Length: 101
Image (cartoon, rainbow, N blue to C red; front, side, top):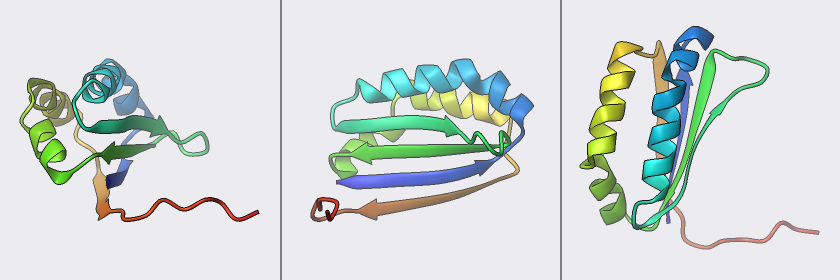
């Protein structure tokens, strides 16, 4: 399982302007083979921060995602409202654990 997390520093106004593109990207990405989750979250306590959480079956599925038309369209929308910064991490998970009781 490939997990991507990102913290995007932007502005509440830019995030609001991107909302249609964010919704389209979530829906299209979730329909892709190998996508287990694709979610954008705006922080309640800091509306200038957008978080991205993704889960992919494999690196091959993630690479295919990068080549989709909706990714190109999303990158275009982001280019019109560029973030101040982005901290992105990609991890490969091995074993799912249960929460200790």
